[in-house]
Length: 163
Image 1 (cartoon, rainbow, N blue to C red):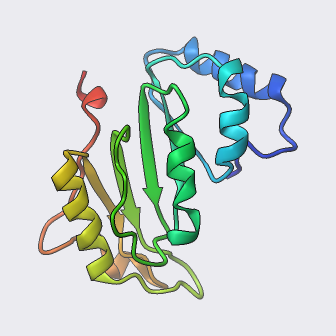
Image 2: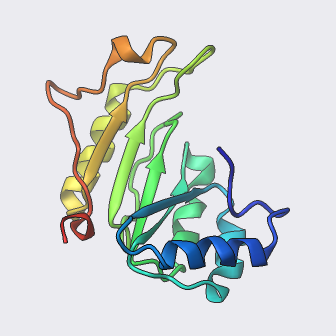
Image 3: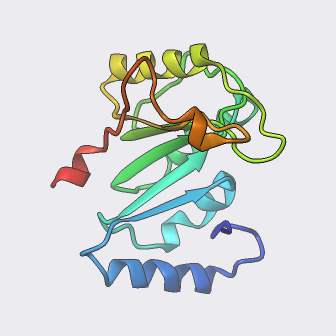
């Protein structure tokens, strides 16, 4: 686990990774970063084939700005990873987003995620027509907590995934 857009990862290395992904159109690559500023800074120097989906992590209100930065990237599919969700995210601007993933924190010391936060995000996705994927409740024993929300699982994917 690492962040491809870390400041210490050379542009040439990132370009090589993107070239490899471009050369493998039979696969879909989901690239996730917390370094949205660096992503935007170098986006123009990267190919953006349809099989490269680009996402940013947004854990709480403090990182909402990453969504605006992601909108500046010419990826065919842009997604939000709202995990670990550590606070409410009301009035999200989902324009230009193709997918939202929500999940709780897991492992020792995991902070709880409130059901109302998840329901609100699901409501916003429904209103904007953005596919909603609920990954997990998280917790110290995430397997026991499961991934059902209101009695069902949510495994929605972007339309590009069904093409």
